[in-house]
Picture 1 (cartoon, rainbow, N blue to C red):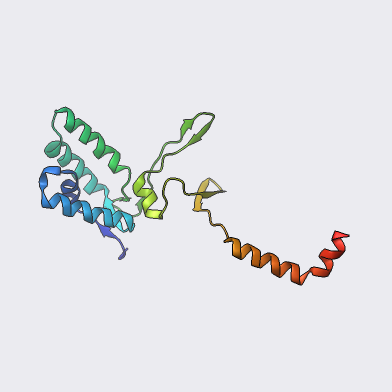
Picture 2 (picture 1 turned 45 degrees about the vertical axis):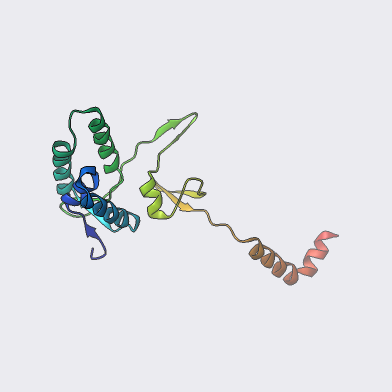
Length: 164
């Protein structure tokens, strides 16, 4: 796992502590880079330390702190978490009803990791119990026209006979 970077508890604390000044700005930038490049990971131990420290040091009973606490909980869903014993933990999402259909919400950090944005067309395929999403790629019009020209040239006589 040499291409991965473990994130220390203090970095997470400074990222969420808006009163930490320069340390807050640096931590915010470092974590953004790590998550976008998909190399930042957290251990379950760091998450436990973060939760305890964040709820004691950052969050107070005031209303705005409760909102910040909710933001901390929501943010944890976006992190790549590694069990202390090794092995990556998957991000868990809940399937939710949307009208007559069901779906999941993909958080912005997840979309950024794969280079997607709202409106990105995706292809969906099912492999066993897994649902695989990939970016939908379309051929350029010029490529399609060139392929059609090659087919028409190669099979011109057969196509003329079929047209009669």
